[in-house]
Image 1: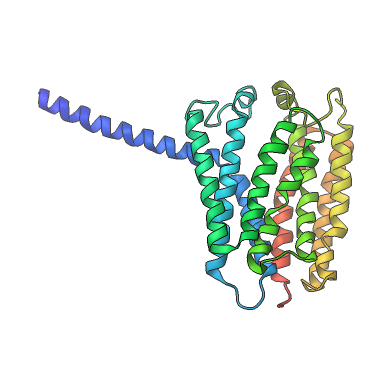
Image 2: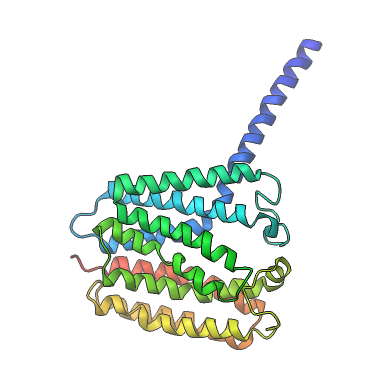
Length: 307
């Protein structure tokens, strides 16, 4: 009887250890913000594809995406490490690995540093120094400049959009070894897109952000005037800017029609939010932004004119 009990306890202990390991691995994955990394990789892919000349190098593309993914994952991890105390005060972030206790701060710190360094090394070794440099600039600017400013000024969104738009540059630099005017157009498309996207999030969770001391919106601006201005203005600017790749000869003129139609549809939802300023309208803008950018990217890739 005791022998059977011991075997049961042993098997039970192994099962529990496996569950603990699975929980730990899932927490490491979650702290990297995979949903954000999807956008980062998609943007880097578009930059690489449009920047490529001649036959596409799949090995170079793979190393570019791997290195970019690791640096982005490390950046997200270190960001959550820095903001763990404030995340515990927000309903939308209390279940993150650090506030929930699924990961210890030292584990997140070590993981973030190692993963970031590994990604930068892969980019420098297997891709080129410029791509690695741009990835490091993104990490440093995001963590050292943007993250602290989130609790100090409402202009943090402008600051955060600067490193947030670098992924297409990483992809272009990986393919060409340099940056050109065409690469910066991709940068500004992503730069502008971030404002309606993040302002919609800021409006939906405005009380959560205020509770934790984040200045995503001006204190006392209960009517959302600043949010409305940014959502409307930057969505409007997106329409002409997305046409520029066709005017520069990177993509065919057939791309223009699709880009304009998508831009007008996105602008429609943005202007509705700017005038209505409700959570329901903000959620529609958020969803529209998630659909809009991949479709514009897809149109660019399909319409690319071979160099």
